[in-house]
Picture 1 (cartoon, helix red, strand yellow):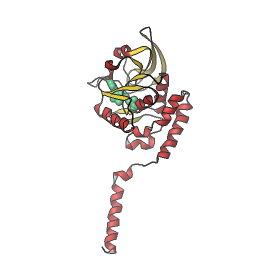
Picture 2 (cartoon, rainbow, N blue to C red):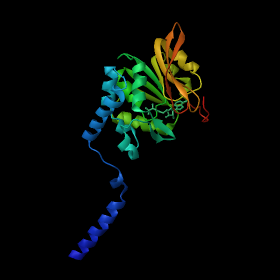
Picture 3 (tube, rainbow, N blue to C red):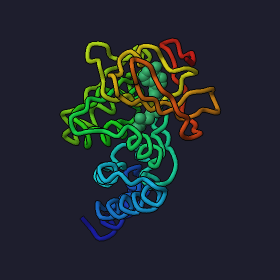
Picture 4 (cartoon, rainbow, N blue to C red):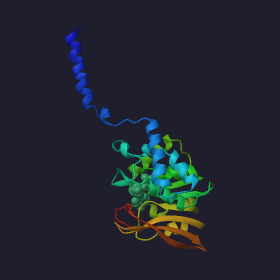
Length: 243
Ligand code: SAH
C-alpha cells in the first residue's frame, strides 16, 4: 500500500472508533471501584450509624458496580437508588445496609427476600447468612440477577420467578424475611412463613409514602415498629396491580 492509502485507512479507523458505542462506555479500574466502595461504606453507611461489623464487611466486599446497568457505572456507589430496567430500581446503599442490620442475622439463618431486582441485596445477605431464597416477579430481572450471582460464584442464593406475596412455602419457615417492594399491608403468607422469634423488615404503605416496618414474631404474632420513612417501588400482582 502507498502512504496515501495508509492515511485513508487511519482516517476511516479514527472515524469508526468515534462512533463505536464500546468506546463511549466509561471504563474504570478495579482499584477505582474499590476506593469508591470503601468511601461508600465509610461516608454513607458507617457515618450514618450502621455499626454491625458483618454488615459493614459485606457492603465492603460485594461489588455493587456488577449489579448496575453499564450506563450507570459512574454512579454505582452514589448515595441514591438507580434504574435497573422494567421500571425497577436497585436500592440506595444505606437502605440496603439499614435493612440488613435490622434483621440481626446469624451465620446459620435462612432468609426469604421478596423483590430480587438486581440481586445486590441478595448478595449482601448471602455474605452474612446460610442461604437466601429470593423471589422476583419480572422474569427478565430474575434471569439477569441469576446470571450475575452465578458469575460471582454464589451457591447459597436461590431465585424464583413469581409473585412474592405468596412467599415460598416449600422452604418455610424462614429465620428472617426482607421485602424490597411496598404493599399496603403485610402479606399474610409472609407472616405465616416467618419462624417464631424471627424478624421481618418491610416497607408498608401507598405509592409515594411508606414506613419501613420492623416486625418480630412473638407467640405466633407480629410485634411491629415503624423505623424509617421510605419510598420503594410498589409490590404488584401478576396483572401489575399494586397490593
Ligand atoms: N432488592 C433489590 C431491589 C429491587 S426493587 C436490589 O437489591 O436490587 C423491588 C423489586 O421488587 C423489583 O425488581 C420488582 O420487580 C419486585 N417486585 C414487585 N412486586 C413483586 C412481587 N409481588 N413479587 C416479587 N417481586 C416483586
